[in-house]
Length: 276
Image (cartoon, rainbow, N blue to C red; front, side):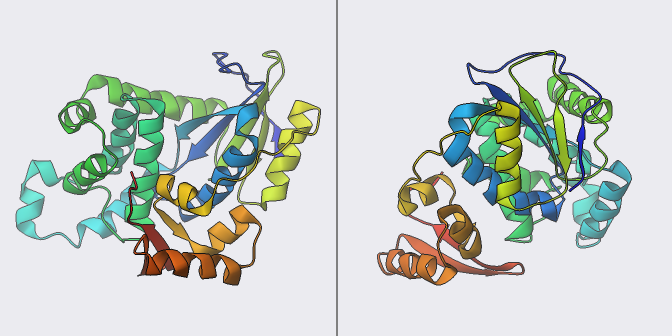
């Protein structure tokens, strides 16, 4: 496990009355960052009373541009002539910061949906039309959002994220830095993707005590807050065999509360009764 003490301390100290703060560095185009999502979900369910979570955008801009170049090849000449349809990885990143201006929860919902669009529905998340649909889907103010996407505030927030990534020497995605309530202590950094137990171990180490996990919510309640989830991820979150989780999902499917989606990364289940 690539684990080390971060060389930098926080510039601010916002703990929201919780003993820990976790910086989660993500690249919206990174499949491993998407794979980390169910682990983060489980960590928040079981130990969310012990920490606040701060999303920080990071990534290699040169790699982003290569990925966007491939996405752009799918567009026709007429689309590319329209400046509103111009593709840029910065637009996808800045749109996340624009969503966050409407609140932390709105920003998290937007990030999750943007990743779903890319990794489940194979959509071009650099397209402003897709970005607008994402904003509308998660229920944020669309007019305000569009204004913020092209604002100085969102661009500055994105630059601040890149600065934090540089200061904390983040070079691999995904990455997490754990901070305890002692502002003088350095953070504990972990890069890459590991089993859930490793993250619980780090949380315990930084708390200097064994935290008590909270009870998991009923499956349907979880799905209402996380509308698109893979059955293997639900099995991990609920500590159940995949077959047992799928049995529960099929019951919900018969009740027309979920539908199965066959995606390039395997089958997913979409909640259709409520959702975001």
